[in-house]
Image (cartoon, rainbow, N blue to C red; front, top):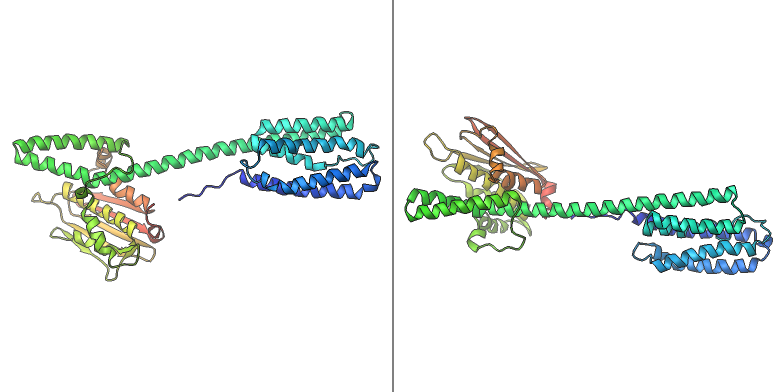
Length: 404
């Protein structure tokens, strides 16, 4: 499962730290010039309120949800009140900075992070007007400070808006990717069960003739319609039930046997592949168990089954029978490799692309799609007249996580 981190969350943490540091700076300046203020006691009372407010409201500036509009208004009013109170506390104008000093940038930045650059601009303008009133005129230092706060708040607000839009786009992309993967998984299940049964009914019905031929024709029509649905992505939603006969495939039956020989959640891949061995399929395996996560082993075995099904259906020997096939299982330190090779006529150039366009997705979904979901790869090499070789490689680190 992919974990997404909010882009704006670090900004809230930085703002909380800034408010505390700015409070400490403003308080230090006030204490340092305490005896030079015209009326220091109102200033001391203001700082007592400001310190209590800043420290008690730290949770409010931890996220956009907790930073309510009411908090923002009170925060900004407290900043403007401190600026205007400086007219009385420092009536002689001998100190210079306003009482809250750089702390006033905190409420403006909170406006920007919460509501974007427009909110930040409004907060900066209100604080700027309060500074101009406190100075009594538009001086160069005052204008410089106002513009600095305004530019910073607008810039941060714009960045936050872009970050939020990017997060929404990423969330939609992740949802779409998950939906596509689920559709591909369902398409693989359909290809490995329903489509193969319909194709078999069509072939046998045509061979038998009579009413069976009509049944075969209907099966062929349904197969074509279902392939069209699968190739276009219009597959049933998750949770659609399947009959017990269709769900209980040979791979499922042999998986239960393989699970008996491995630890919890694991199985021996050899037990899943050995049932394929027969008169026309030779299976070569290591002497030691090849243990994988059960889900990964089942997917890999299903991909091998799909490759052998392609051999049975499309690769014919000199006498018209199915081609001879070989399965080689290799257990390397960092990966498990299964190679399926046949001595058929090979695959003509462009045939796989044509088959995928026709909705025949055995290689695209049942083989390559499964290996991609496992974090592995499926390489297909076919030479006309010399057969076809499919190499399935699954990295053990990816296989240990199984399938999602």
